[in-house]
Image (cartoon, rainbow, N blue to C red; front, side):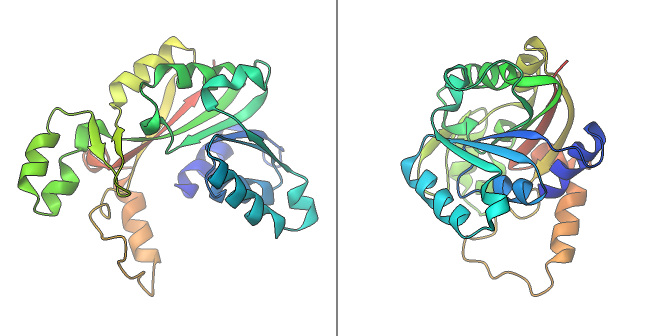
Length: 233
């Protein structure tokens, strides 16, 4: 995921340019802190108080220069108009958030609104066209049968959430003037691994295989997650 995002940043922006980044739903701050360490100015917009506290804790141990590049705001990504003007950001991230929204369009419209012309929108969504893959690979045949044609699923922490179809999100972003230029699969080969699976001593072959599968048809189409990259017209 990080490699894919870096590839898109390199393709869209001049080398050395300091970007204005909005991370909607940054969670524990993996991407927000990584981008701040790279020199970018990052704003995290988080609606979950516990996640916001965790990110503040993580940020507190960073060097002062990095802390100064990160701003944290309590708020809902669907209400960016309350906090930011149109075109405020060069890069907008919304990773693993859309599945918790009752429907995607209000969030997508809010994200597109704050994206500057030529800016990059990075979305990570659950793939509704592949919901039968995980239960099928785990031998849960009733679960696999129920997943066909469904747009909802139970995630790893037991919550009933929603998935998106690539064609539908692409059509919405086209209508918002932020067409999808590139898309990848994420967790193509590893989605059925248990949460407590040991990390291989040599992680690079696993990452390389996942990276290749996420770029290659037909594998990327059955990924658990889709990474969609749109560019503001």
